[in-house]
Amino acid sequence: MRYNRGRQYIWLIILVVVVALARIRIGGSVPLPASYEKLAGGQIRIQVQAKPVPSTATGEQWNLEKHVQNGQTIYTANLYMNGHEQLLFPSLKTQSKTAAGTLYESNGKIRFGSQDYHAIDLFVAADGKSGYIDFAKS
Figure 1 (cartoon, rainbow, N blue to C red):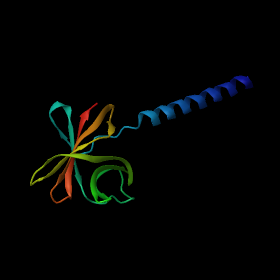
Figure 2 (cartoon, rainbow, N blue to C red):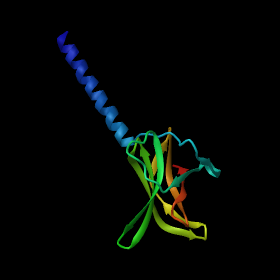
Figure 3 (spheres, rainbow, N blue to C red):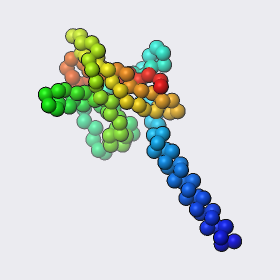
């Protein structure tokens, strides 16, 4: 009897490790934010603001950050969960520039619920304090 119980514990530990590794490999999913826009073709648009996210924040928060390095400016849309940065989606190359702001190509993957998405566009308003990020289904 004792031998069987030990074997059960070993299988239970193996199962927990496999589930944990699968979760890490697949990545966790996040809920869609309370306010988002559904675009044509199943795309999703999330508004971002250039404001700090306090470490005491609860739930999901999105913000826009400006990074200057070696004279080059890069904007990122960041996902925070409970005050901790989880994912960031950088601006890559400029697609278009207007008086309203600049549209950048973006990249990065995220899972909303059970659907995988990838970032396609990051728009930054001319004042650099607001914008949006668009995601398409993967």
